[in-house]
Image (cartoon, rainbow, N blue to C red; front, top):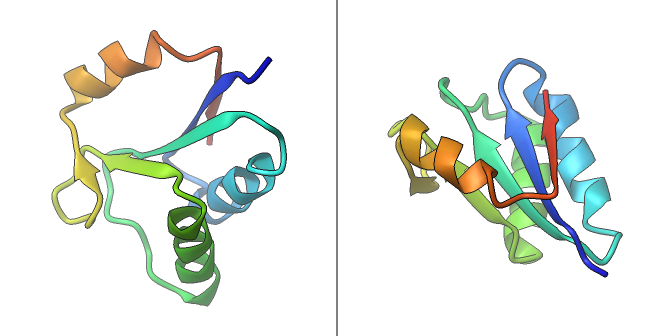
Length: 89
């Protein structure tokens, strides 16, 4: 049975985004939450974000500087209660 998995991106964004791409290999629903800071744009991050978008992974952020679906911290906290697994980075 597919699980709902949330990847929280905070400090180790490169590692978190690589892990999110890898998690798509399982038959689970993966969603990414970029928390607090603006995502650093570099070759690796951009490739991983593009791959996640191509794979229809939903990406949320509480920082308006990030060009993804905007949610407040409170909205994200409520959303996380619906997930089977939460992986913080």
